[in-house]
Image (cartoon, rainbow, N blue to C red):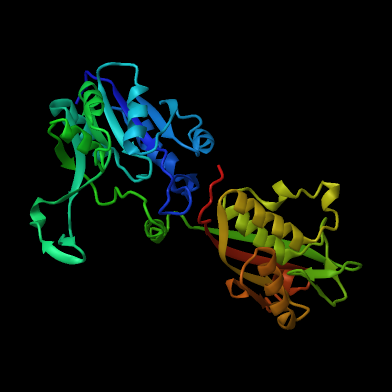
Length: 386
């Protein structure tokens, strides 16, 4: 459909997230804040001409998160409630005519199809909103007692974007009585006497409201990442053997710029890789004097802080040391404790194993020691940095 009207998306992102306990719009999902995914759906939509963000105390972080989105033209300050915030966004539109698509900032899963259906219907009728049929039977109650059961076939859960003729919606906002009880943008239009047409929504187009909603995101495992790390160092005389932060009495040690703790290095690379933050050579180059003889457990702690700064935390680590000699079984509990402590984990979240290679290869020949590590990381609940 070719539209003869400009479409402005007003994304409401000024809420306090009081039920969440932290700003859900800045919660990381697939490496980006929630608000980024919401805005990206409209940035990429061919029928949307411009985007206006209505923000609150999170203005600085949201501006940073959406930097580079060409359709984002304005950031305006929201009000004390949704109507005031929407009014601020609508008043920022310079044109007198067109369509306004009002979107919850906390609906990051809105699809292009949902946006298209709502816009095209509003272009025909003046007002449209996506909705899905209610699956559960709804009860009306008073003082905890059921007083009615409306027919489920007539009930729909309304989503966003809710799209309106701009001129008519401005008039509806202006005519809205003070202290009017409205729970969505359609209610404003309905009180003005307007008719809203429902379009097909999607059950996946949820609004993130409680921490349970974030748990649903996690079960899609789209916001959890796996990392793998590998490192190897040559054994040489005149060096201490350090593995997992532990000094292992042995006739040789590992050669390297730092303490050459091959196990800890593998864990560091796994974590950095999972968060797409590069590798240990990038953060702790072996050409830097500062890292000569460095304690790798302390460097691991710094890696943990790098992840935290980017909104990630480790879930668990599983590592394997490939070593013909010496025998390491007696030192493994201490290795686990040291790694866990550096990353602020419980010992049960860290697994360390050791195996020989039956005298095969360079490790089997006692020429060096290698280590593999895999890890799982997840977003930090309540993370608000951008």
